[in-house]
Image (cartoon, rainbow, N blue to C red; front, side):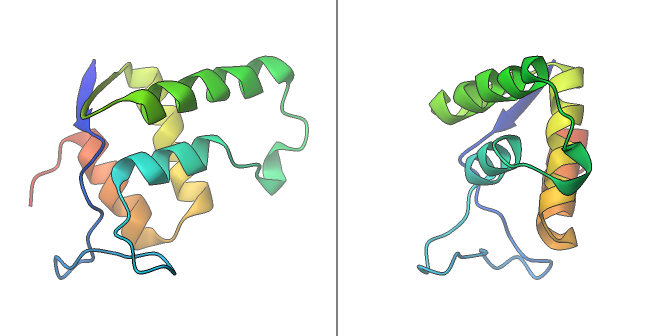
Length: 103
């Protein structure tokens, strides 16, 4: 199992918080839920079972107050989807967090 803090704020390479268009800081939870709920061009034939698996996982992430425990499989799925949906700074930040990379 992999344990993550979902309320952690995503930061730039310089350590500055990344903000959305409303000037609100972006958290790990926000990125993970958005990635799990997104549709990607290369997934046009995604079956309903996988869609529901992602929905259940998105609800789990969203309902977590702080510490989230993920299976290696779920963590890998989230990392893959984040790389599909976000730029390198955000995707790299999430990947480092999942992989346990420390600065």
